[in-house]
Length: 154
Picture 1 (cartoon, helix red, strand yellow):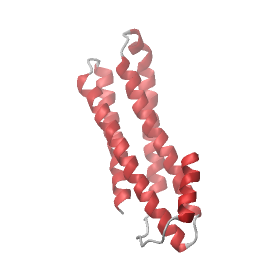
Picture 2: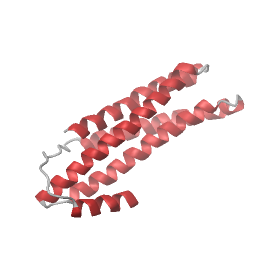
Picture 3: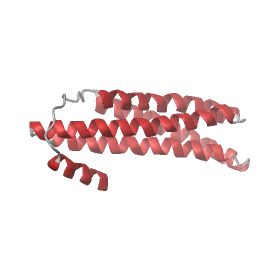
Picture 4: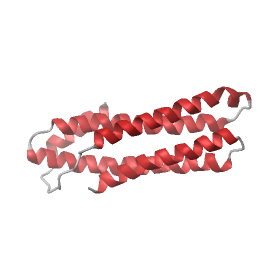
């Protein structure tokens, strides 16, 4: 919430700039769909946790953390887009959209690091169930990272 307050302050005091309109059509729908997929991945991983904990495998915990991090980012994205949706002044909207694109670039970088981490879990783990789940999660997180990257360049 502190970052959102900072973003609002930056919107109000940011210098004038030229920016193309950020096309948000369908972003909320894609955000919701991705969030539901990631939530399902988290639930599937948590079901595997009990038997994996008996084997003292930290990879399942690490995989859950990666998914939780991406879920948290999608939550912050929704809040940020809600704020952007309320900005009505044309110049302020252009400034806000520039900041949102920069934020999406940061989200893409962070999420791509999660993809690489999950890829390591999928590659190096010896439990078939966790390896299969990590491979699926890797694809789901990559879709989110790709969407962030595309939105940062609009």
